[in-house]
Length: 78
Image (cartoon, rainbow, N blue to C red):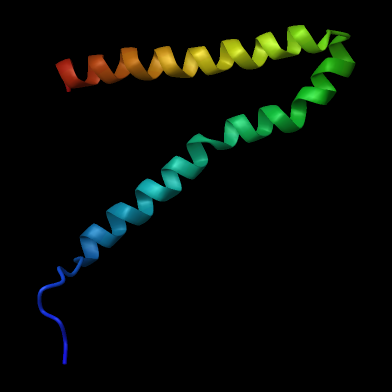
């Protein structure tokens, strides 16, 4: 017997979930690439690990502030 109390997802809802998960994965790839490339950046530019840490920190802050700013702008203007 099927339990009819459980809601079923439509095809469109499944596509939305799949596209959101895919987009989220691609969005976070740049942080993975940064961690892989950071040792080469340190070696080729001759910077210290503290300076490399600042590169990562500024990148994280830029993502946060950009998300907040453009999120507010998109809510206001569509």
